[in-house]
Image 1 (cartoon, helix red, strand yellow):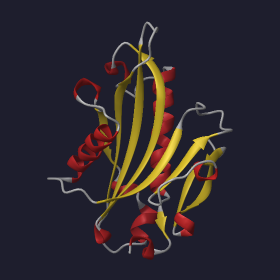
Image 2: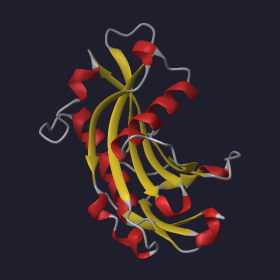
Image 3: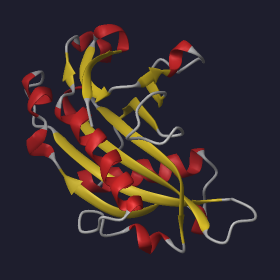
Image 4: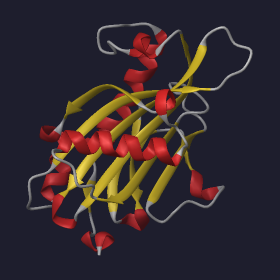
Length: 202
């Protein structure tokens, strides 16, 4: 998949995103803390796939891995997903060592995690359930008490259960390839995430 350099938040941040994505702010209003990109012309992605950058107040968790779960729970609540419909964590990976560009722009230690989660989607008249997969990247900006979220949403994966979506790295079926591609997008964006203007965080 081809990537291109991308400035965020009026040039305060630099990162990388796949080619062929459209800045959603050109067609609808986006919150100031978010940057949203939708697929317009990237054949490696499905038409409904999207990439979202967000800046949130740092959550207080017992550990950094727990912060990932807290953000997933919050996203579930915002989308009205409770009980069996809430996000189910499939895997979580510490990629702190890959945040080379980010650590150049801050003097504190930085933690980075990538998680893959799934939630059921209501699709009437289909034999198999439809699942939405969320690849969630978390960078903890300790100096500014900010959690930076980078996520890829992959809707419409037809499987019997979310267990079929596990073993992402060891499988080569089309669903796992799609999830792995989304994971690669998030990791690439995190690897190249660089703060150019610290004033963004006040």
